[in-house]
Image (cartoon, rainbow, N blue to C red; front, side):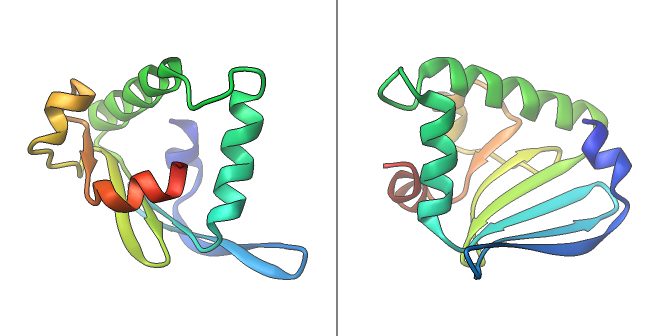
Length: 120
């Protein structure tokens, strides 16, 4: 969680081949990641799961671990697609039914349909 502590505030945009693909906004103990190009996310996931053929269950365990660390630290990471929050990790997460799926109260799936479209 060093990234949350290292970055105090600010904004940055990532461009790939001249196209804006990602925006990062940091304020206090909150990081907002706005994915503008879903192909960019799919490429990142493909690299992570290369050889496994799909988004592996072990990745869900990693995400749960990160979210629980963020919660203990009082920090939040919100991941959006084109400005609409898809998933919230850490302290700011307020899960309802998603807690049954993720087995933690540190992950809130804000939009299941958008999440499925992003990773499918």
